[in-house]
Amino acid sequence: MAITHLKRTSLYDVHRAAGARIVEFGGWEMPVQYAGIVEEHHAVRTAAGLFDVSHMGEVEIFGPGALESVQRLVTNDASRLTPGGGLYSPMCLPSGGIIDDLTVFRLHGDRFLLVVNATRTERDFLWIAEHTRAATARNRSAELALLALQGPKAETILGRLTGADLTQLAYFHLAEGMAVAGLACLVARTGYTGENGFEIACEWNAAPVLWRALMDTGGPDGLVPAGLGARDTLRLEAGYMLYGNDIDETTTPLEAPLGWTIKFEKGEFIGREALLAQKERGAVRKLVGFEMMERAVPRHGYALLAGGRPTGQVTSGTFGPWVRKSIGMGYVAREYAAVGMPLQVDIRGRPTGAKVVKLPFYRRS
Amino acid sequence: MYPKDLRYSSEHEWVRVEGGRVRVGITRFAADRLTDVVFVELPAAGAKVTFMQPFGVVESVKAVSDLYAPLSGTVVEVNPALVDSPEVVNSDPYGKGWMIVVQPDDLRELERLMPVDQYVVAIGEAAP
Image (cartoon, rainbow over the protein chains, first blue to last red):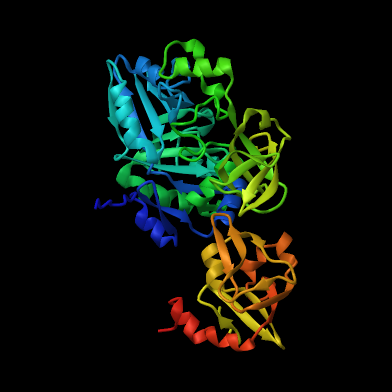
């Protein structure tokens, strides 16, 4: 029998001391909640939340062939990135199936940083290394901790710990070597919650110092520690895909609502032919957002019905704490994908009314 | 946290005897473990429930849990407040968060449930 040791981030003891409930996630022991998912969710929508996402992976690609390698690996167009710029992209198999969805930052001309999902880091790194030409891929996941500071108060809180002018950091841009609480950090204006906020990488063992500095200065603003539970409900309200639930190697960006990330005109990339063919044919299934007509909660794996007949499965579902509705996403045959289309979710054997709605469920005003 | 006048099931339901009927809900322990109750699915009045068989479902943001009948009998009342305010299960599990009232087939079934001192030991919350 294989014995698998669960990994811990450098903030594990900090989470325990803060009263976190710890769960296993993708081989890691992570905080799922502190005070409670709903309370943390509301804090992020109205003030700010601090998440430990150190389990996420970081892969650097550098060398003369770095841009070409990145361009081959991802569907989006990294050639348009200026230093400090970033973009969101799937990384696909030749079949068009999604290996992972990730954020690509251009650090300098020939240096790129890819931030990838925790559950996919090993798979991604092998794939990236295999398809890198005239450049080096380095897995930096074990040396970089990552915190996400998210919410309308995030900028005020971070601003107190750095001399840098955060107004100069645009959405989906990154600043390298920014001093935060005296620590050298990579700071990006990105997130997975639908709120304004930052993702801050620092040296692995420095994370507890950074965490405490942020909590101490942000406490009076309503900053709370937030766990993976709230991260999931926040991202679902914001309409973001969760790898392994909503997208995987059997789904393509054209089936998921990620067609906008495919830049066919940029030239060759892995998956291009299959995706082009699928685009010409039209995807036979589509991922849609739906809301329930009553409070019963749709869950991952429940059957989706149209006209009483199975048409797909729920990939993500929850009660949205901010939108105060039961919401979900799932794949349906394309003829049922139009906004307003009535669907049913098989909840414990009972077909329960739902309707297709436009994603996202929540957009900050 | 755990009222002395109630009887408790191993599945964390409480029972309060009210005349010949019993009122049923879930304990503070269960409510805290669930956190953030967002939906409660209950049988209609008139439905039969059976000792330690599922009679409903409670959903939190993260999880779905079955509710087990602490007594056999007939449901005579269902808490209508839970339709729009299921969060009272968290805020007031022994009061506003009650779930059903049952007309028991045999009140002697109560003896199969735990008194409070036994329940707090079962959940590891007995005073040392």
